[in-house]
Image (cartoon, rainbow, N blue to C red; front, side):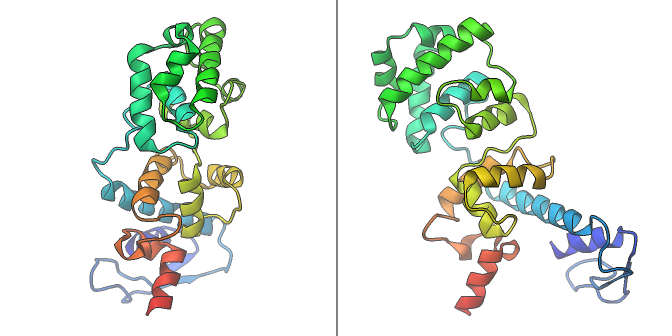
Length: 261
């Protein structure tokens, strides 16, 4: 990361490198710079953006080839339904439950025609499966009659659907339609704060902060990577910082290392 930042600084007007202060493990001429002014417009935002991109690069490498049970769903309809099922439910339950439902109801019309009791049976043991079955049937009816079996490519229209919040809407828009949106769940909220990218108290606040912060080059990847990282290493109660590939870029990881030494 130090080399990435040195390259960025060397390309920034108003910043001059002092030759001869490189590092033994790189080809950089220097890692020591002099700034003409304490406040060079946009430099801190650019530095943070470069750090975020590098962090995502390391996470991408760490979880290459690893797929959660819900990541196999790619189409907007599949994403919408599986995300509704996933609320307060583990991925290991959501994935098979959604697959069972899609085997009987691959589209809105088929789901609409299923008895509510059958939907309950198919998605059990997902949390609140009875309420979700009722809402899924309503969602299917709306998309069939109002949108002609096509999931709307619009945030406000998605948010108007039963049991669809900002997290679900952003996931469908980002992964289903390629919009530059960030789906913030408990993992994204927790890890973004631990890294020091943001300082927020609630996922809703994190969604707004990250939307304005994350570079477009990585914004759609952050959710999937942080879900894996949160499930495997950066856990809610017991973090495995010694196994973390981004520890040197994380304020919490650096603090933990300092306290343990």
